[in-house]
Amino acid sequence: MNLIVKPSASEALNEVSFNATEGVRIEAIFVGSCSLYVDHDLWIDEKQTEDIKVEVEGIPFLISTDSLKYLPKKLYVDYNPTLGYKLSSDEETFKYNLRLTRRENK
Figure 1 (cartoon, one colour):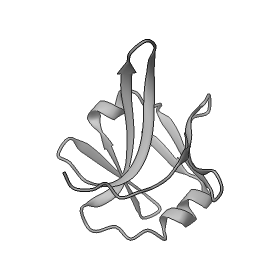
Figure 2 (tube, rainbow, N blue to C red):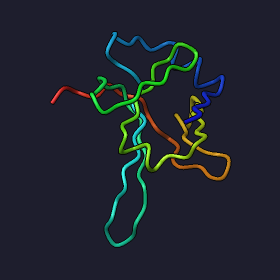
Figure 3 (spheres, helix red, strand yellow):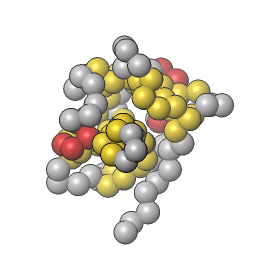
């Protein structure tokens, strides 16, 4: 996967402090109900055994092997202070207005 972090997202994410086992989780979950679609999300989470860890500009990203099935080969992470984070590819915007929060331990 080619993960491209836009300068505004890089600047915002470099202000976050991560512990050694954390990263920004990029999640893509296939949802089947009345319609079929993939829901995308971002949050700070602990690395799990099935995750791949990708580091871009010193920022750790975590992606599960399940999520990889639903993500494009080239994924952009962008940020706007008013609109939050955005996940997109060259072809489409997957989700915007994402707020980065730390996942609580279960």
